[in-house]
Length: 380
Image (cartoon, rainbow, N blue to C red; front, side, top):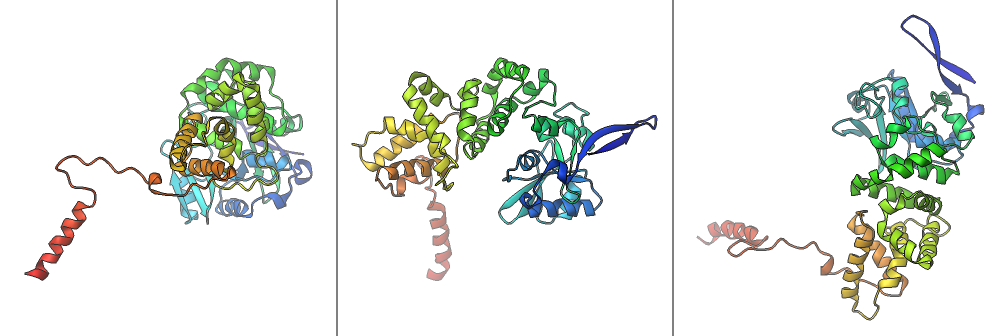
């Protein structure tokens, strides 16, 4: 094990981070995405300190192959954009860069400062950046070129001891962003880690803060959960901590009222990402609605009428989640198909046209007028 030092104002060297070598961190380099490596190498070659960060490093240490690779650099967004033509800058308050490799997107962020607290949106140093991350397990920096892991906060020790430990102080971590409560429980359940008692107590006390979170953010979190290989364990853990009621209140109400529904619902979610799961459109979302639809669908109705009623019921059941219409449509069609009923696409799936007021042109009336005007010179 090596150490990383920095110099204080008085010139004294201070130990800042632990540096783990390949033999010590145990990351299998074959599991590291080649395109993520190329991004890091290109930024480093341009003179900017750059690392793979976050959940990808955590998963690599745990022997898992990450789906996403985030990158952090001292390079500013404008510099990153100049280095990668296949990129664009996003965000208003704190700008990030998305680097594109075909359909794949790699998010590259600039180190953030602590100037305005843990949620600062100003650029800073790596030492500041690490202190505004949520949990120690997500605050490790991996250099794929040297194959070292840089640890400023004891994250490696916490991973080895299977512990979810916050970096941001408990009085503020969940107030700053209540979604961190969901992530803390999710990380613990997915990896088999424990949550310290003070963290559990704080989550139970502050869980009502989730009521103010936007449906779009909750939808993003739910999609991450149902695409996890540990979806069943995560949902059970969230429910035991009182958090799942803010993600899927209708499902939690039914689980409380009907133990049979609870066992079926959890079994359906636990089957996600297991053998036979192909991640087809609507397949994961179906795990959230199929058991409910089984109980409320009247198969005596006509197909089109039944589809409309079931689709509306499914949309209402997953609130406040707001999935894309095509995902929910595929999930409902898969439910019908499982019962041997094929729902064909027809006019009822088209977007409704805006109402036409008396005396107003229809949407296609103006193009017809232009055509008549163009034909007039030929008839004169």
